[in-house]
Length: 188
Image (cartoon, rainbow, N blue to C red; front, side, top):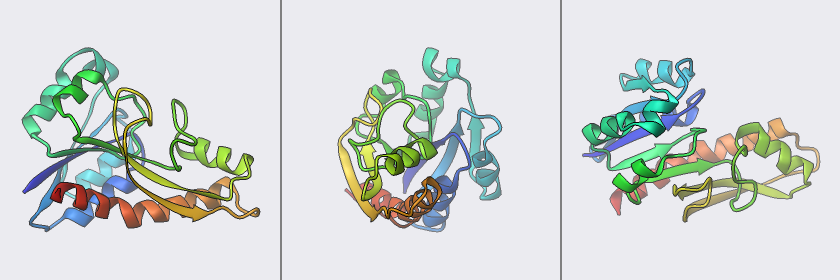
């Protein structure tokens, strides 16, 4: 049984989707959710789905081995960043090489980097009159949104689209593709 740990910072819809997808599967399960936001809705979602959930602060994450030790104890086969907003520390990445992935709400390398998340991305896509956007699932390295790309899915952006309508299209792509890509990664 493959073990998945999810990091999230906010609502947790992708985390919930992954937990539900792998619930009652014999190949993998989400064993823990970790967040940097003690008020994140993802904590409630995880609890409601009987998944262990913890919050941590910046010191525990970046300056000490507290979060690293939690991960070592969990022994994850895959660590998934699903709407997690902090840069992942190198000392954790070194312990889990090629085992940390992220989902980004744009077609990287466009609209990546520090500060490019959520509505910031969708607003930039609309402001720049893009004709398409999408999602990118990629490995995490020491730089924001620069790890090797695993998968991309595209959708069109119409001239009438707003950041909100683009966000809805991206959400659909995430819900459809993210669990399947994770499952394929765990098989390889």
